Length: 116
Image 1: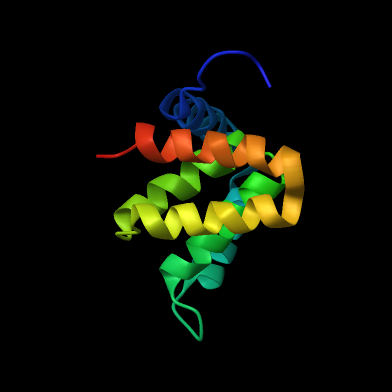
Image 2: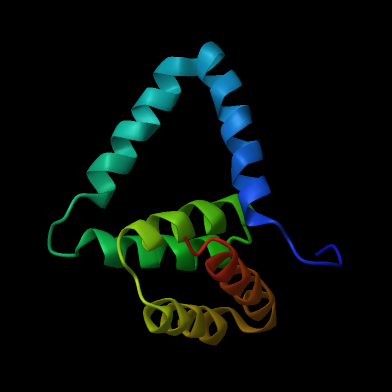
């Protein structure tokens, strides 16, 4: 991990720029992924917000900065609380040890940076 604070707005903006270019060349694949996302996140036995908390946890476990940023933004729109995010990150640390603790800290930074 690089020194200094990560800028999760810049990270997600940068990925969005890349996705826009990729959409021009692989639009069918990106459309299919978008459909998969909508289906997976639809309310069912588990509500959408809980699914986004799970997605944030997987982003921490996989050490994916952009995933952390995008799922943090989604959780803000869904009205997640500080405590819900903190509890989710606590489970990440429990399951993933030290590396997850480092990315849980990054996810908390994203949560605080992206508060709108």
